[in-house]
Amino acid sequence: MINLLRILKFGVKNFFRNIWLSTAATSIMILTIFTVSVLVMLNLVGAMAVETVKEKVDISIYLQPDATDSQINQVKNKLLSLPEVKSIDYTSKDEALKEFQREHKENDLILSSILELDENPLQPTLTVKARYPEDYAVIADIINVDEYKTIISKIDFDDNKEVINRLTDLTGTLRRVGIGLSAIFGLVVVLVVYNTIRLTIYTQKYEIRIMKLVGATNNFVRLPFIVEGIIYGLVGSIGAFAILYPLVEYFSPFVSNFLGEQSVDMLAYFSEHIAVIFLMEIAAGVLLGVVSSLLAVRRYVKSI
Amino acid sequence: MPESKKNQSRSDQGKPIVEFINVSKIYDKYRQEVVALEDISFKIDKGEFVSIVGRSGTGKSTIVKLMIAEEKATKGGVKVLDWDLNKIRDRRVPEFRRQLGVVFQDYKLLTRKTVYENVAYAMVVSGQSIAKIKRTVPQVLDLVGLKDKGRRFPKELSGGEQQRTAIARALVHRPELLVADEMTGELDVLYAWEIMEILLKINQMGTTVIIATHDRDIVNKINKRVITLEEGKIIRDQKKGDYLL
Image (cartoon, rainbow over all chains, first blue to last red; front, side, top):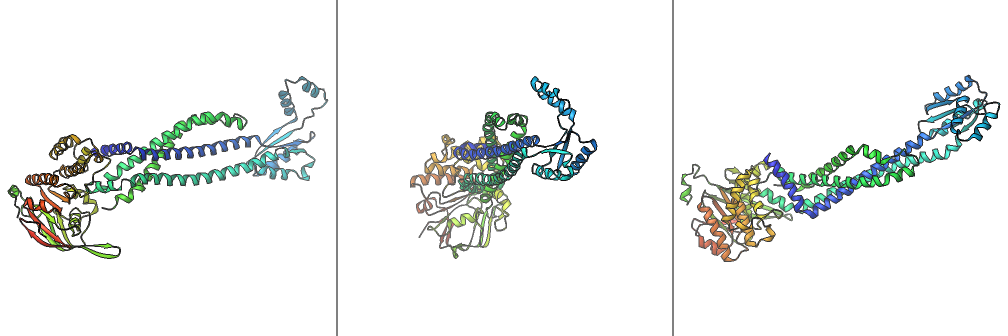
């Protein structure tokens, strides 16, 4: 117990007495954790954006106004049998009219002109959502055959084709780049932190030798360095968090604007998960500090 | 047998505190064997004050390194304070080292610690209580004349003051054996004698003292046992000796 307190004390003292090296190690730690956090946030925003756009993308299949229920069911069942299809939404003629009236209730001219017609001119519609964006083309091709020509008046897919294709590309690229960048960066970061801590320990290899010659056990030499590593991690993660939060607060409206709808609210997400994010950063920082210190100190402590 | 009468009451009197039995030490330098010590044997009893003398490179420092388990003998047996240093396990080396005090040639002070902390460190490693440390360290600093310099860092001290800090650290945990390697080498004559007086005082209080030195004047002045080395061999071992050559 008394030794544990002493080890803690030594670690804290060393941190402050070696303030330049500590500052270097801590800054690297802040940069590291900050950059990784930003990468994770970007991936998250990307995923959320893609999800939002995906929700908005669909195929509308306009059916002939005189199509019978059995014919409609035929198409419906065909679609439901496809594994690519996630959901189908059927809008009948009457529902389409109600929808139309609701959408244009401010515009009397349009409303009155549609009511002047003898018959409801709107078509029943099947709205199809696919599991993956790249499947829309497949679904459209399957439906666009002679068999259904008599039932279907129009497949509204071309209008969305551009969006869907771009989205497909974007999701793939974002995922690949995100994973690649994170992996490369993670490796660089571990190496940099490890080397920084190793440098601070290297400057003290004579001290380590002396401690051992005076009768300190390996653990008694090693643990203060580990404590120092923990402090680097703690200060680093708190520092990174202190930079990250205002940045998120500042950029959140831009991101929302850029992506159009209010569906991606970074700040709300961040605030909601603030405790988890903070704890994760601290855990990552401390782990990084401890592992780096352990690896770095191992070399100099071993020999008698 | 020990010269000091103070030790005759001790129960384990008669058993040597340091024993070298046919010890050889061969270094492997650039694939060439360098013989540092060749077939050396001697015994040092409790309470003795022994000077190991010889020119530079005759193996004095090697003997010190073997005595404090910094290195292992190539051949022969080394026994110190009832520990067989040929067989000592790495894990138990710290325990052994806490039982002796060592003053190194280059002082080996911890640069990031103050004088007080450097001295206290020798007690801290063996888990002594804070109260005991607070009581003992100032006493020892006083003994070596550094009472007011406890808060300084080593780089703020003169060479002599650093030396005394190193002595204080070697003494603070009351070791039975004090080993000093070439400690008066870089000091001026007057100062070296002052240090030697501290060591004699410690010896009178019952601590066995072994010094490795090439300072002829000092050795001749104190008139204690002298072991003389030449080219890795003992050429003379006198109870009340001079440093000839």
